[in-house]
Length: 141
Image (cartoon, rainbow, N blue to C red; front, side):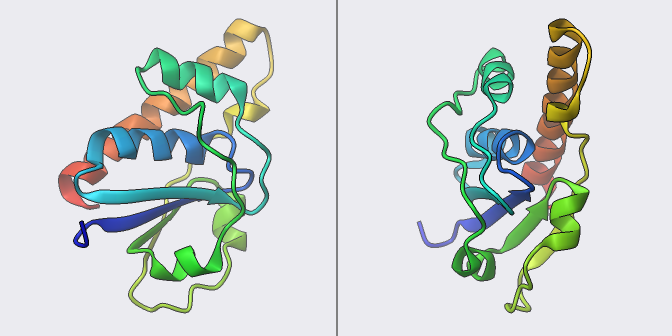
């Protein structure tokens, strides 16, 4: 379907937040959007991110952790950074029609404490991303 808008989620390592956003938008908006995600580096999928997404009914276990592709970056309708580092270091987008937004979320991979406390951080970030995606699907904003 040619009228789908391409959304490109960017993060530092394409392991947690961008993967969660990718999973939610594919689940909630696949009729309106083509969804891709990448990072400044590829750190691999974070197993905790896979686990909390599974608890939310979304399987991202087959997603790949990819490095930003300049071609996709310049073809996207929306480029959305999910961490400050990616926002500051995002490659230059030469296509002036790309809408670039920054949605900042804490990095759950940096959480410390017991396994339960760390997983709680992952769930909080997951739920915040889900809420933001739901708003985006409803409003394109």
